[in-house]
Amino acid sequence: MKRYLLGFDIGSSSIKAALVDAETGKTAAHAFSPETEMPISSPRPGWAEQHPESWWQEVISVSGKLRRQLDFKPEEIAAIGISYQMHGLVLVDKDQQVLRPSIIWCDSRAVAAGNQAFGDLGKKFCLEHFLNSPGNFTASKLKWVRENEPLVYEKTDKFMLPGDFIAMKMSGEACTTYSGLSEGILWDFLEEKPAQSLLDHYGIDARLIATPKPTFSIQGHLQEGPAELLGLKAGIPIAYRAGDQPNNAFSLNVLEPGEVAATAGTSGVVYSISDKNVHDKQSRVNPFAHVNHTPAHKRLGILLCINGTGILNSWVRKNFGSDLSYEEMNLLASRVPPGADGVSILPFGNGAERMLENRYTGSVISGLDFNNHERGHVFRAAQEGIAFAFRYGMELMQQLGTDTRVIRAGNANMFLSPVFRETLSSLTGATIELYDTDGAAGAARGAGVGAGIYSSPSEAGRYLQRINLVAPQQSQAGALEEAYQAWKLQLLEKLQA
Figure (cartoon, rainbow, N blue to C red):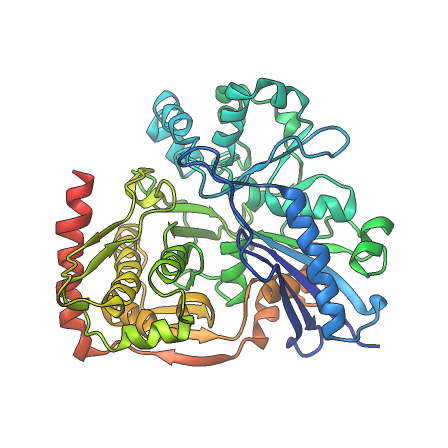
């Protein structure tokens, strides 16, 4: 009998699913839902919310799409894995009913609470214990709810991350992972236990934490009701759960110090591995427990996050190229020389940016000449601006000892654009390796590790196949470096002054 591994990737734009053949490691079917991007509600400037039940409905929808794509038997599914958008907050009552929309990753409302805790507890204490400022992460979002929505807080039985909620809908069990606690700044790396000092400071009852379990482990089993909705068999183990960026790194076999992964979807990320408890004094880049971290075997993922990445490219298309496909946009951008003839864009228009010390600057378009510039210049400037933000963040990561010579990425989103990937490679001097994998396939393979089908995370990575390699182009490097320095000095640093 065939054995398949089923992975779900719970994003803020869509829910993706993949069926992976457990024997060959190859993706047998892949689907996403909905067809258009899921809406993000913004009741106030800087806020961003989605309803968790809408994610669950799309999980049901995408499962149906997989069944229509591949004629598999429910008993052939050996394990389920879940990847999810990081840093979100989901609150449920004792009956596991959602109490309010999820406050998701790009919501900025908790910045003040995190900054206050950073000062009150002491920067040295926070960085030594949590490796981060409490910042705008999940714990600070819960503090905001406690302060501003006390009736909601009083009804809360458990708080969870988005992937924890989906796993709960499947299994009926409210649990989380140690890696997940670290991404919410709820893990103490000196004491190797939940961050009681921050919970006490915020006045949060530790009993609200869902039961923590290892990333690769049996975290529950699919119940009858959800199984019927998903067209699956009850009893399938849920054997892996990880935030989207640790999961992306795992899906690219980035597990050991010196290895680097990147994504460029709605947001952009560079993610490198360290075996030391390192931290940035301004908490602009953020270490979290990686999927293979244990107290005896430290593996931290140092995460650079740029909120305004693919969302900028999407905004530009909507407002300047609604009649074009992304491929046609890329072609027009490629006809404009490096530096976009002086047009420059800051991509920071999607909430407070961690690498700018949790400030919200907004986006800026600069240098437009109505007599000489066309929309192709705007398309190129947007993609270059995103690459410039990557370069700026990677300079910060170098201060923590990250030497980025090779970047591994999935052949998706912004990496589908020759302009973007060639700009990033030429500007940073890094070779970019592209692989045919994504978060849903990574989650499926992670389930294979958690269920014991694969002996280790590295064994699951043996199926990875490189499909493209992008090397720095010296012919572009000079013009791009000049444009980057102008972007940095004339736009970014002036805005930060």
